[in-house]
Image (cartoon, rainbow, N blue to C red; front, top):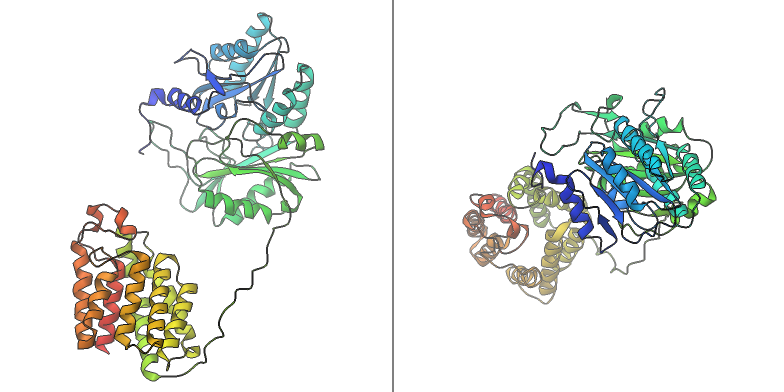
Length: 540
């Protein structure tokens, strides 16, 4: 799999340097590359309790991204999914710890627990006050004596970070962190594994399945379960978590494991809102990538039972920009639609010829949906056929209520219907085309003159001209030949549409962003649609 890396051995150090360079002086790293990778606050005075966390890299923005006022004092970074060394942890402790001491916040993985634990012992032997808390918030394996630490650890980073901003009593900070850890539960689900830099991707999750209860280092989950929808996925996760959370209000941390789109995370948030615990969630952190697993296409949900003081600490401002903040939840806010003034609906009238023309045009677009989508996939996002088919379906449904015997009013009705039913820029342009044609027709112009007026207005607004590889390459020649009959218009439209296959540099529309290799030999889908309509009309 292609990745934006330079060298496998330097991915972590280069990522840290990039983070620090962009932090506007809030962070620094110890001069210990390549073995010592420690990020520290630049504004730390050692008079307060230092908070140190870390572990393997690949979870960004955790942990280095949360070093700053209100959160961590230092982050100890290992290689990807590998615990940092004892020497690295000890260097971090010595760099930021003063008289007040430090608290190590460690996720419950053997390597992290051992390396941080031994470093703590060595630091104590040097005279430093060091306490350590091991977080195990994962409920995937309920009978496991030492559950894994996952994204719920971030509740401790944030709440204890706010507390440590003023606290100098290490025992009090440690006790508070332990209490928070007991009230956090987490569970994750993924549709795909992650891609470790420089390593072939493992393909273990079967088609149609999702992995439940996975760790954050790419390790397998407890089981693979059938996957259908986001709602079902969230329901499964919430059902498991509900067995581990106490009664009362909850705060949710919805974490993107790295590969989900923001659109998917929004849908998952809505699924959480509608879940069995949705009415108990008083606040949210996320949805956001907070503790990732490289590019794993999954999410994790952490639930926390807060006190009033915890809520205040979660709301407290912090310096790290990667922290998404706390937001209160409530009823879904819906604002009434405004009343939009509109002209009265035109009186329906019948004309068999016009009825037939609309029927022919719309059915051509419906039959061409797949072909036009395929053409559009070469130069756009592959939806031209579907967009035109949606408009065609709408016009077919409304034709019996339209003023078919009044061309000017009919053009206006078609413009309005297209503006509602047809999305994207093409929908707007076609609505402008018919609106301008209606205006021209109302002033007594001929049908051809009115359609040409519509074309000119569409060009003024859209900016495209003949030769730019758009529908105009077929529409303009067809209208120019219109007075010679539909057969001549159809021939001109077809010639114009086919000419777009040799136009390798589009100057308008989405195709203008596409390389020559993608365009050559393929007709523009808009021009092809126009040609097919004229050909269909000429054949009837």
